[in-house]
Length: 325
Image: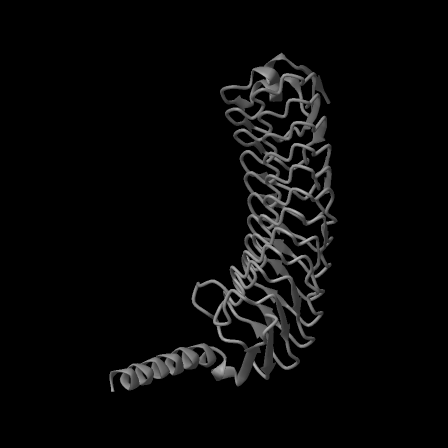
């Protein structure tokens, strides 16, 4: 009798657990199954529900590959978050949205073909996908959300379409294999530390039309050797180029009025900089430890240079030759 009751209780518990797993996709009339090889198949039509923050959504950590079928319109928030064994994902044409942290921490995932139909990739969607090697953002996506590819250590190639107008904070933070990224001409703004810790990034050209870049934008980009800034830019955040050890020279845009705190701190190879006449303030530590700085080309007059409010820890700037006009 006791054994019979135990079996009944166990069966009810299993039924409840199964119902909880299946109901995650019930609202969208989706079904799913995982076979013995760890292959997940999601079928049906509509949007996948969002999930609570838990490893591998409802399907569990044994998932090794996933096929999202035609008719599914979204990958839910946290759907595959923490699926460390996931190596392959197939996404359907017609998919519109990839959810928040949808694939975060899928450390074995090497490649994802994002369908052309996708218009929204939410924040941290591929964060810490340490094996991801390349990505093509589909035309139609207008914004790269926060930390989308942060910590993708093997990401070496990124294609960003002309539809993108804004790159949010930390999108490529710590992508140590990136060497060069072509930014779209449609871009108008970039938030803070987008390329921070991209230690092998060598060259960047920010397109005309971008008016500002956030703090720590290229912080510790030790391999950065060439930077082109547009004349449309009016603001550069603090520590934007701090720790860019191999940057030899840079020309600041003509409408800039302030060189913010620690902007070029520890740029130990910086030898020459061009500063526009409109600059009225140079922040604390803006040129700290820039001991190689030899020449400052200032577009204004000696009187305008003397009137600039220069903060502390800028000895290298004070020792450099100032060339006017």
